[in-house]
Length: 89
Length: 272
Ligand SMILES: Nc1ncnc2c1ncn2[C@@H]1O[C@H](COP(=O)(O)OP(=O)(O)OP(=O)(O)O)[C@@H](O)[C@H]1O
Ligand SMILES: [Mg+2]
Image 1 (cartoon, rainbow over the protein chains, first blue to last red):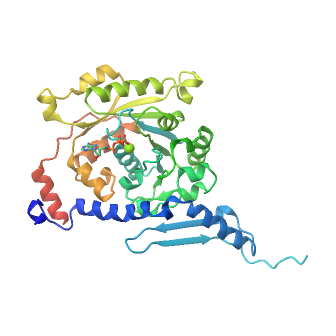
Image 2: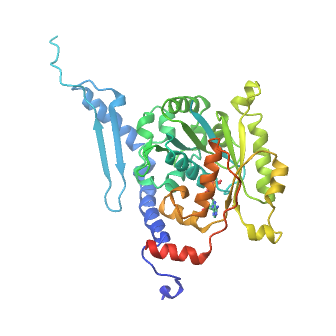
Image 3: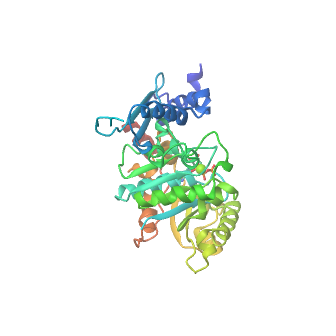
């Protein structure tokens, strides 16, 4: 019934792309996760754990996020210095 | 030497974010390392117009507050490797921006980029003030109608008084350019819209470009593509001319016609 009012029910037009992008984005915006400072806190905690075992610079952490419709991926890269034997002490 | 350029207007909805994205992509296409920064704290939109919204991790406020490094907050464009986006926070308010914080971030960006384009929020409050404060140049986005021209005049006054360059008072003020957007030749011909000469006479700053009212702007925003990445768009061509002038090329001023719907439909059909 609503189809009648649609000018061109083309699936690949840009307005359709806009709707899909917004649906994904708003789902994330509205979730509690987006509102908290999740990522800075996560980064801090991960660094803390890693630092217990090796020396890393806070500049050497790279966090990548890709939001998807039913799954998002979080990628954390930590550049670690070449393995060095621990100083006995 | 890196250049910091603010895209500002006073009045809302005149095309600042569209212009920031278009100019940023236009500069990057020419090989200049360019970063576009969203200063509209709480109403983040530049990431959407640039099409990188799904990859935003940290933002300007996280960097200013020391919760993330600048490098982590920059989102690299996937189409142009000379282009990056520094998004702003969607949840904080303008008070999270500090003069010192902004200065530090811009200072760091200057070491890595040739052009830093700051997308100002509407209004003349804190966010707009901080977006323009450290600028070397300004693109004043204006629509050919009375309230937009009036607000642009107000903003020009602020650029001449409330910026670091103005406060130094050594004559090297912020260089302001007028960008006339949403220009509709038919409506000007019918006497409904102010002609270019009238706007120029009132504001008395050099004209950077005339961007026609164009349906390709909406389409580009739908898919998250700066309009200068769309070769077939007349608004894109007009922005390309503006970018050339911004980097100092001498170019004759021309008005791109509005796109005819027939042409647009054919183009869309081909794409689909
Ligand atoms: N040349 C143009 N032709 C047609 N529509 C345009 C043009 N320029 C901008 N628009 C439309 O005008 C609206 C406002 O544009 P934009 O978001 O760039 O303005 P803004 O100045 O950044 O707004 P705000 O003050 O809210 O930040 C958008 O819907 C955009 O698609
Ligand atoms: Mg805007």
